[in-house]
Length: 197
Ligand code: 5GP
Ligand code: MG
Ligand code: MG
Image 1: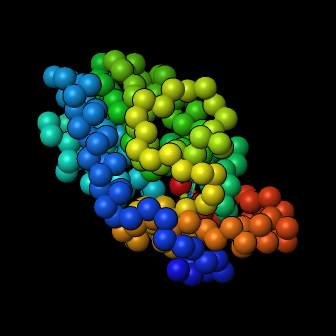
Image 2 (image 1 turned 30 degrees about the horizontal axis):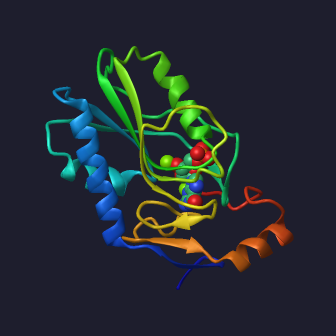
């Protein structure tokens, strides 16, 4: 059990499980892309650990870059998506694979699609390490999913709660009792306590 700010989290996904999922994704994508040299685009901040481990396991030549969007406040996604920072590279004609830490409502993903539509990329694939199917509200196809998880707030392996927890090498899940208490006391998650994507 760990405490970050006011909340308690319990161990949820081990380093070994994460490593196996990352390796599986890297091998599957490498097989599917055949001789293409992809550009992997990590969405900061949450994806930094995933991208680092992923590209080490990717068995073929590739490029890596990062972009940043802020989309998340408190423990639930909001529709408030901010602008893109950091896409300086020309991606026209390239096979681009977006590497996301987690897909929840899909709002961030919708924004990523909107941005990349004007980039004239050859192919755009979405790969996410974690995915909450119960929370997903969009129709965009998720090409590669590492681990499906329930619709409950997690931290660790790049994911934060109000700035803390990104450094944890494994993933922790918010204890249910506090989650319910927070909803009752403070309204639906998302009201207050900002974190950054
Ligand atoms: P979406 O836009 O799909 O709702 O959410 C995407 C972003 O919200 C993620 O990149 C991440 O920054 C944040 N997010 C979604 N679910 C969680 C979660 O369970 N824990 C944490 N720490 N962040 C989350
Ligand atoms: Mg993210
Ligand atoms: Mg966050």
